[in-house]
Length: 344
Image 1: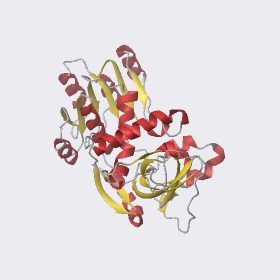
Image 2: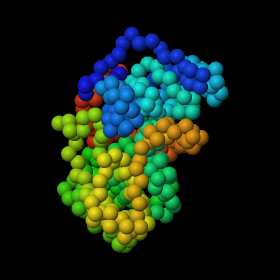
Image 3: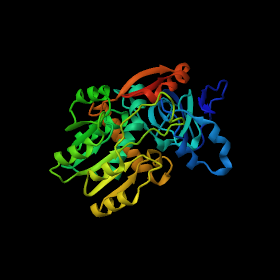
Image 4: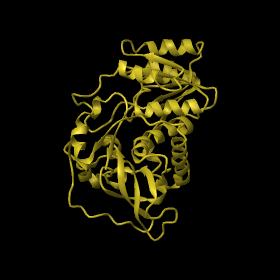
């Protein structure tokens, strides 16, 4: 399934892809539904590949069975249940019956975790794990701020933060998000309702930290989907950059997924005075860099272990069939809480 001129369509009568020497053919059983991250894809493909930008794959978080393996594959064999992320430069859609991936982009799925749970968790969990442990250098005893905690990435980040022994503050911009956060176990340390007044963020963070500020801010960013100005997009209250930086403690870190972030001179001076830093979050960087394969495998296996032990709980809104994906994509931007998963 692909986007062509911002409309989804299903390819039929496609041959089953063959696995190369180091690759694995996977029969997909479930895929997390997401729109193509157009700005990121544009950066991955060179000018010579411009036609690919008009045919963008849909979905990259997959789980399924190993169908066939290449002659050099040593870690997997046919019949293994696996989960992983499709690299964006493969130009393959996860919303399909078969995909081909490198063996080190996959890990075995625990028997106690369903295919839907695995596919609905892995992408957002990798994003949250990277933000907290690698970019944010989260330590026990820290106070952190996670924006939009009811989002799929945000809820998993809150759970990982709780496991790491930190105090997590989060935000909600609607009653539905607030209800979801209040029902989480364990609950976030503090929930800030910014539906009416986004400026409440700075005041509350400073009050909760005795004026010192938070050690880490995780901002999973606005949606950079193919049509971010769609009429069904959520009207979120977004704190200003100055408010976010003002919440940081001295030496604090701001981790963001905003690909087009710009800072004015006032924000730059404030960062300098605080000796603070900004880290850019892109979970696809792991699968685009072969030298990080062992570290990436550790992340995937740790996520699956936590999911199997129920230390992580999926935030899945509902499932849809493969035929219903074009219609489901139309309302994806209006979804406030949870993940949509394609059951294949």
